[in-house]
Length: 248
Image (cartoon, rainbow, N blue to C red; front, side):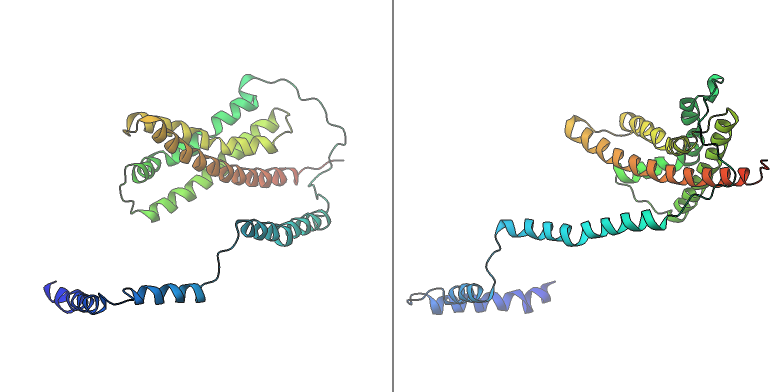
């Protein structure tokens, strides 16, 4: 360390002192500063007006985002094709009969998310600890395994929920499959409340809003992820069972 100080900052300090003494007392006491300022004024471009960035953003939206949105809408309408249902569908919707309490969509949605949450319950503790208590997280390979288990459990539980719904003569299974699998995020948010109360030492409005704001964003993303996987699994299950029907 002494050698670095001796051969790097110390000679520069001595040279700066000598140059300062040599230039002191003359008419132009700060020539280097004036030369630097002159170079900056001649070489750097002038600052852009504040409205220029807004014009850039509007131009990006007008010539990039908006045309791509219109093109995607046109492609989606003309290239989607017709629905190839595996069996004949009745044109008139029939009334849905009342069933037992456990066939109610709210009960099915609330019960379906328990098993997926149970598959990630232990790992959620370590994730919350590493994120909010500033602990290092090392087992990313195990996290990948837990993620795959979560996807498989979401598909299996959604298939069971869809089967219960269809068995109760309720054909509104699409949104139910999405909400049933996505209800896992609701249990994760409830667990985050428990973790905030008993495992953290956060107090005050700012820390509370910071904690629950980030947790809510995470839960919304998890809800969309699990719901999409559930709809995909439920769709494959419905198409599979109805493709084997023989309708005269």
